[in-house]
Picture: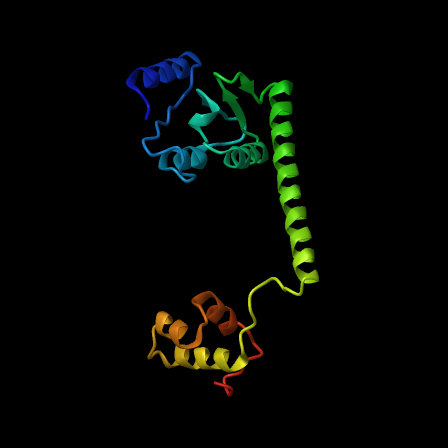
Length: 181
């Protein structure tokens, strides 16, 4: 929880930096979608500069921070973190965030490779990944129940084992004709 003197310190630093508008978030910074952050993102235009007191004031995770920075870069928005001495209007500031993005990309690639290796190892042991195949009789029954409008989605799932997402996917397919129902 933020202490009052910390809030005052942050506001003083932002005012000293001569920002035009201050957004004070009252919700937890752990939430990715926060009202004030969403409002800020809506009004930003090319050439604007987002100024924060510290990096943890805008994001609690590296992944979310990088997503924000990529969004800012795409829109031509600069970013400054006063305490962390980061300023993307400078060459070193841009370099720092590109390095951060590269590290995050490396992490995603390593996770992807590990997942692929795990699937290969599982298949070698006779296990197949992915969702279990749904029988066509169950699909047809679920579709008939849905089209009859006599059953709720939870009743259809209980009777057939087919969830709403799968049901909607099959409703969109053309190879199941109305005659089959």
